Length: 396
Ligand SMILES: O=P(O)(O)O[C@H]1O[C@H](CO)[C@@H](O)[C@H]1O
Ligand SMILES: [Mn+2]
Ligand SMILES: [Mn+2]
Image (cartoon, rainbow, N blue to C red; front, side, top):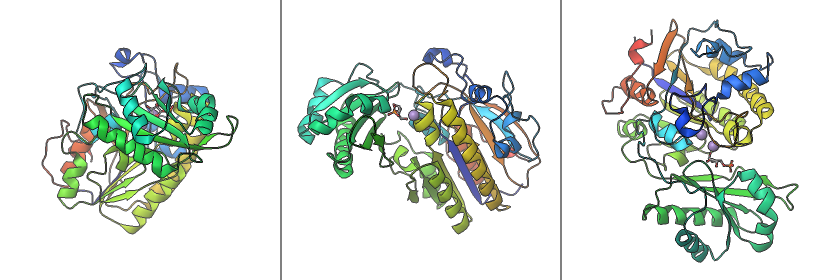
């Protein structure tokens, strides 16, 4: 088969497809983002495009309620298992791009060390409040009024290796919050703390009843430990278009064009824009709203509505595909909106691969997300170690 001129990979952030074999180690046995979502919606989850792309053909213990197991499009489907020590977005995306982090990064559920907090307070000249694991929306609900009155910084974390700082845009301008987060990134990088991401979480509003987070969120990730598939592509003159938080997750490395987005709808607009204006390269897009607005909020109603909205827009992406394009749809981890707690869940992720020239088939269970990166490199004739096995040869 001829190689593809362009590969478009869309990451539906947190749309997992059932507990991974090691879910128990994460306290996530029984988690099943898509399975529980479909069951919650009974037969009313309207995802015709994902269904046509073979979502219901992915092998799993129980069929997805209401999703047809026959599909008209000749796609290849499967699921991928994560080998990274963590189950955060950074882990998932890095592993897809050939860099699995096998040593766990540090987590601080009971709060970050006083030394780090003091450094943040000294640099920012602002007081740090909260400092422990908390839901981000609950944090601004419970502490937002204090933060607004004091001009302090709400520092919190989760079940991931993240340090998040929430502050009202009215008292801590976004630029200043980002400057503080960059300072924390540099400070953490030159220490023993090993934290995956520092995240700026600006919000607006006057009282706890109307506080709202804004799209000015910024993630400051560690720099990838080794060369990623993205680095390899750019070095070999293959253009990489990073849409959504891709740029943040890869610490700006290996990306030819960085496209920030406001929400999932905007992300699809940007995908379509890039597709209309290029015909070669690697388009890598993340649709974060499933995770941040619905998964962490344990909101299956909102999650399903969002999946239906994105599904509808996938119709536009399909219509825009050229004959030399390969479309890949996957996810970076689970975040079951019906599960206990409010953290990511250790799950398989779906793997849907479509091009008009294919006859369709099954890719089985891929033992690492890195199979995706290996496939991309092979397609662009680049030889480099990813830790994964390319499935390019299986696409017929
Ligand atoms: O509760 P919110 O602020 O959405 O935070 C979530 O966002 C982080 C990044 O996905 C996760 O680690 C989790 O902490
Ligand atoms: Mn994610
Ligand atoms: Mn998340």
